Structures are given as C-alpha cells and as structure tokens.
Image (cartoon, rainbow, N blue to C red; front, side, top):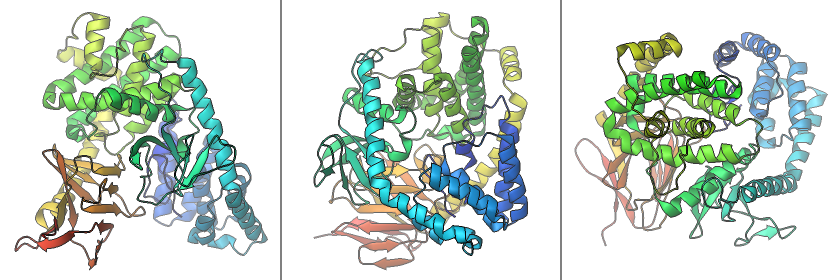
Amino acid sequence: MKISNFINRSNSKIISILLFFTQFSAFTQEIDINAVYQSAIKAYDSQNYQEASNQFTLLLDKVDFQIKNEGVYYSGACIYALNNQSNQAFELLEYLADKKWYSKYDQISTDDDLKNLHISNQWSTLLKKVKNNLSSLPERNSKFIKKRILETKTLLTNDNGKLWGENIWHNDFLILDFDYTIYSLNPLANSKTKDTTLFYTKVSKNALSLTNSVQEYKGKEYATILTNYLNDGGATIIHELFHTLQRKHKTFNGEPISYLDNYDARQWLRLEFYALQLALHAINNNKDLSEIQLHVTDAMIFRKLRQTKYNEFLTKELEIETLEGLAEYTGIRLSNTKNKYDDAISQINEREAAPTYTRPFPYATGPAYGLIFDYLQIDWRNGLDHIYNFLNIYETQYLNEPIFIDKNTVKKANERNNFDLIHKEELEKKVKQEKLISFYTEMFMDKPTLSVTSIDPFYGRSYDMYGTLSLNPKETVYASIKGTANSKSDFGNFHIKDEVGKLGTTGVLGTWIEDLLKFSFPLPIQIDGNKILGEFYEIELNKGWEIIKTNVKGDLKIVKRKK
C-alpha cells in the first residue's frame, strides 16, 4: 500500500495522521483520537494486524467517519484485509468505488496488502468498478474542475478588489492533475476542449512540479493548483492567484527560517499557536472582548519573546509570513467555506503537527492574525508592496503601547496556554532533532559527496516543506525534493524518488552561496552517460556538463565541460 498525503507525501504506508485529524479541535477529543490512530499505525508497521484492526475499529467507533480523504478508507481496507476481515475490507473499498469514484486501478490491482481479497467473487466486480471509474475520469475531471473554477471566479468577482484594493482574479493559472494533465481557461499548445471554456493537454513530468505554486510554463508564469486541492471552497486557487498579484508588487523571501527548529523557538511558537486557537475559539463562540484580547496578547507575548531572542532572523521571517501568511489568509477569507475561524484553527492544528516549523509556520499564523485583526476592526491591510509585522500592528494600532514582559507576565501566560505538556513534548523533540542533525552531518560533512552549484538564482525547486532540516542559516536538508532547470544551460534536473523521501533516511543538502544554491548528494552508485543514480536520487545532466573528482577524500563535482 502506498498512500500519498494531502500536503505532499507521507512515507508511512498508513496515511499521515497529520492530515486526518486537522478537522478535530485540540480542545475536544483530538488527543484520544490521535493516540488511537498512532496505535493503529504502530501495530501495522510492526505487522501486528490484529491489533491494528482493533485500533482502527475503535477509531471508527469514536468519530463520524464521513471524511473526505480517500486514503483513510483505503488504509483501513488494507488493515482489515491483512487481518483476514474480508467483509470489512470490501465494505470500505466498495464505498470508495461507489461514492468516492476511486480510480487508482494500478494501485489496487497490485497492492500486496489486499492479496487476501483476490479469492473472493467480489474482487473482480470491485476491479471492474475501479477500471470504469478510471475510464470516466477525464470527463468527470473536466466537469469538476470547470465547476470549481467558475465558483472561485464568482467569489473574486464579488470581492472586486475590496479586500486588497486590487482584483485578484485573472485567467493565467493552470490546474494540474497527477497524471500531468493541465487544464486552463486559455488555449494552450496542443490543447483540446469540449466546450471552448476549459482547455486541457498533457505535459511531460519535467514541465511542471506537482506543487501548488507559481510556475513557469512555455515562457510564461502561471498560478498552478493541484486537482486534489479544489474541494476547499476556492481557498487554494485564491491563495495562488494572490501570489501572482503579490509578485507584481514585490518579491519576498520564501526560504525556511532555520531557527524555528531550535528547541526554545519551537516551544514559543507552539505556545503562540495554542493562544491563537483560544482566541479564534473565543471569537467563534461570541466570548467577551476582554477574553479575546487576553488570548491575543498571550500569543503576542510568546511571539515577542521568540523574535527578540532571534532578532537577526526577523526580516526574513516577516517576509515569508507576508508571502505565505497573507496568501493563506486571503484564500480562507474569500473562500465560500462555512466557518473561517474553524478553517484557521484547522491550519494551526495541521502546521503544529508538522515535524519542522521552518517553512509551514506562516500558513498557521497568517490566517489566524488576519481574521483576528479583522474581528478587532484593526485597519491593518494597506497594500502589497511592503512587509507586514503582526506584533507591531497589534501594539501600535490596537493596544497603542508596547507589550510589557516580565517573569510574572510570562509565568501567567504559560499557565493559560498548556506550557507543561508543550514543554515535555518539545524536550522529547529536541532529542530526535539532535539525532537527525548528527545523521546528516555524517552524510554531508564526514563522508564524500557529489556537489553542483546552479548558475540560475531562480533554479526551480519543489519540496516537501514538512521534510526539511536546517543545519545552519545557510544550509538546509531536503528529505524530498525535485529540482528543475529553467534553462538548458544550467546543470540539469534531479529528484528524490517519491516512495522513499523521509527525514532520517534520504536527503539533498542545499547551501546558499550568495544568490546561488549549491546542492550536495551522497556519492552516486551508477553513472550512465548523463544519468546519475544514487541510492535514493536521480540526476539528469544537461548537455555540456560532466563529473570530476576534486580531492583525495573522494568528493565529486558536476561542472561545465571546458570547450
């Protein structure tokens, strides 16, 4: 079984708990549910399928299982099949095929976890349904995508620039499916259409990255949105369209902020997350303004402690928060989802559960502060050509004075925001973090490596933001990454194999040398012409590049071939 997760990918065969439980509040039963699901994962990984089945059944009894992510159903089916509970397995798989239009025929027909089901007469009927779903997928996709696009266009047409002073809608975006079919409102090279409204064509795997981002295609920039993000009320489409508007005004830093994986920084950030959730819950439940202000001020206390200690990172931190935080806020604020505050709380839950905070944090803080400031009627949105500082906005435009911090203030804020549990968990995380740093120090510092430096400051990268580790401010390990040259004059393309990318197992080291990125890989195991194969990565060199040995240690380097 292989389940891809909602954000990028999960390397556990069971779908990441991070995604499954974002819908459940930290203030209800989330901890109990998490514990049950973790137990199911642990039992599955240790091949104790009876216990995995018991835990999964307990999970079904605890929650309303009418959730959107098909991977959860598929995971349960695999667990039941392995435990010889065919009826339960078929019940989940039939639901997927009949209600969720499950169409991954190659996956289900070859998955060893489901072998016990093959002897049943139901199996061939199920496969036929899945194959039929696959055949009807293109037409269903087109209808679904067109509907979501037009719904989002209506939302932004109704806004008509009221939120930011400029209309966010434009047609320069692509919807990208996982088979590399792209859909557009504009005609594309070799594209087809059935109604002259939506055009589609298939592209090569190197043409675009499977990420939600602004990407270049055929010499033009497009906001690119993956098809599995279209069921969020238009939030992701709006997020990416906002980015293209942002870029017309100012270019912001989007690199991971390395200090946010430090033990004390993570602890302060989690306390800030907790206080923000309390504030959003209080607003959602029409609590007194004094209670809301107390929670927001607590969040700002933890923010001020963190940003004061790590002041040298502040500019870049605020840049990425302006870049991604405002985009996420705008997506949620203008979407047609029922409850914006619940959406913001879900974002906090999701990002807090991430193994690293260096890149995901603004997706939580941006919408939280944006919605809170709107509720407090702070006139905080004043254009897209500058960096936003939420702490400064709150102090100067709402409190009209700086937040005073002393030991007693911090002690009381800690008591209100679950400090003891967060402190315990972050001490445990610190030990794991130190082991990862030791692992990658040996991989990239102690052992010989293959390295290459891009010649383009905008060399294309897409990576799992939950799979990064900062060794220092200029060096970041990417456990799962794809690099794409914007020009054939650059060294080429590379990727870590999707099925293996995981912190503590795989990695490419990115080192900033002024405005250029140097990539370091473990030594390859095979070189075949312009193809370089490592244990977990592949590199395809462009014409005119070669590998040379650089020292007695055995380091290799990819360089431009001398004429």
